[in-house]
Length: 391
Image (cartoon, rainbow, N blue to C red):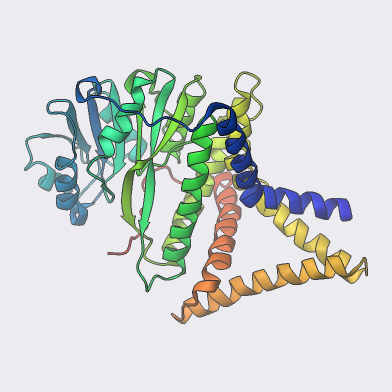
């Protein structure tokens, strides 16, 4: 029972905290021998031609602001193209875009899902680099130059931008938890990128070399993650660029955030099954180490080991195996009670920030359970399943 407890606790701790600590010391050691990474400076004439692709489904409320944001991006004249695809939209999204001749619009009434729209858009992309961004996110003015400068390095096949969640002082648990989570994720991605490669990119903002792009299967749930990881599987690095960021509002509430997390979890288990060669790759061992540590454990076994650790700790505490196990169990009980209390208070719209993190953490792991069930029940559709965002 002690072995079961310590193994389970170690895996849970390593997944969420230990990997970050290990990565921190590895980066410190690497810098001691090789120094800090040098900031890339690329002249305008050396930046590649680029196409910004936006897939939008019924985004009429965001579209005018999104277009204004895109047209205000700094990039050398004549080197940046815009391509918006609005397949399936039955609101005014396509009509708004059609008023801008500098934007190439693709629209058909049939809705086949985001990845089908992306595949169709890629048939029209002729530039060396393609950048993807969501319709409801807004980029900083230098985002394109910050991303595309990395392609001067021939080993780089994709570049991931940073996702930033906009929160205010009165944020609820979903907003505050999501914001904290993405700050932590951003730190891990910076270190992953410095060690070797980021493990996957988020659809809010990422880019790839056009000649390395591969169509993913039409039922792919996490198309952004799979597109970028298929490039990594070819031996190219995915670089993280925090100075290129996409700003979006937090989920409307915990229910909307949970819906989004369950979809991601279902896509996560699908991705793990489809990227089996990367689990134990002798060809790219560092990438495999990063992939398993940062993604696979979270999306597969860790939530189960958390339950096992709790039950094993319960048995050891009541078996009288020493005060240490009783203290550990009390700590677990307090943590989960804090999450339950956070849930109760959130229902009553009473917000205590100290409870946001345990509550959001438990929501994340619950979503993994539900996502795995949804995937194997084949009830997760690859088409857009929009979560409402705060206005």
